[in-house]
Image (cartoon, rainbow, N blue to C red; front, side, top):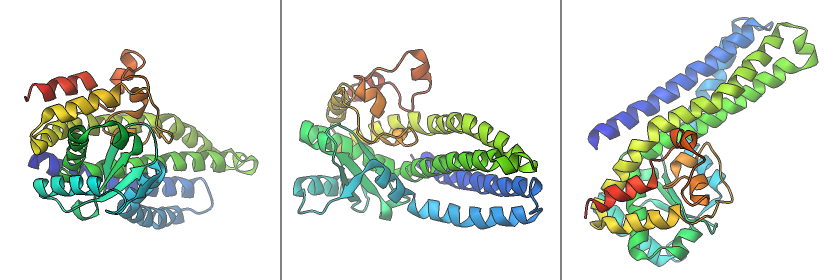
Amino acid sequence: MYKEIDYNKWMTWVILTVFFILVVLVGYLYGIFSDLGYFGVVLGLLIAAPTVIIGYYTSDKMVLSMAGAKEITRKDNPQLFTMVENLAITAGLPLPKIYIIDDPAMNAFATGRDYDHAVVAVTRGLLDNLDKQELQGVIAHELSHVKNYDTRLSTVVVVFVGMIAIMADWFFRIGGSRNNRKSGLGILAIFGIIFIILSPLVAKLIQLALSRNREFLADSEGALLTRYPEGLASALEKISGQGQLLKRTNSAMNHLFIADPIKAAHGGRGSGWLAGLFSTHPPTQERIKRLRAML
């Protein structure tokens, strides 16, 4: 667990650094193909520095906004608050903020850059369809992500994958305009096309590298936290077989959820071996099998 925590902290800074360098490189290329010259590098620095800082400190808020999650207080749902509080104490964590996504689909995720800024978000469907032990299993799983700093790394990835897509669009629009096509800036349209093609693939590969083993680890740690693996196993069965699609899905953040929202909407099935290869989550049946082997 401690090795995973160190790795997650290290990878977060690697991703931030790579993004910073990428933005500066974009500024440099813009300067070369325009009249800005080396001022393009300065422009890149002026964009990269605040973007990295703002992205790091506000990534959780961006993700919650994308999911349509709303914060609740203890009086809104005292049972849920008490459950999260008790599990957080058992895990040695501060009480995270609790959000609810007003959606009949069953799912949940955690976010936040550290323990003091952690958030656990659950859908209305999860609260309506799981019993107490199943809900405890899901909450314990998400708190395990918080404890391992998975939330910091995964949330930063969501934000910067989105920013890379915006940069690709910016490249394409600037380079593709009529006036710029006649100048050297037309080359930016080519960069934009390359970015548009590659950014989803790069994003998916990053998500794959981050997600699968972490889901197994969070499953086992969550089961140890509740001392009842069957609760989470049963919850995963219900979530994966629900056939209900989240209203607000986004491929950039699907890896955050306890179960892939797309697969859950299709009864836990993907679209063949290729979908399985690029899945951000391990097979649900394998997760359930491992949990029940702990009994």
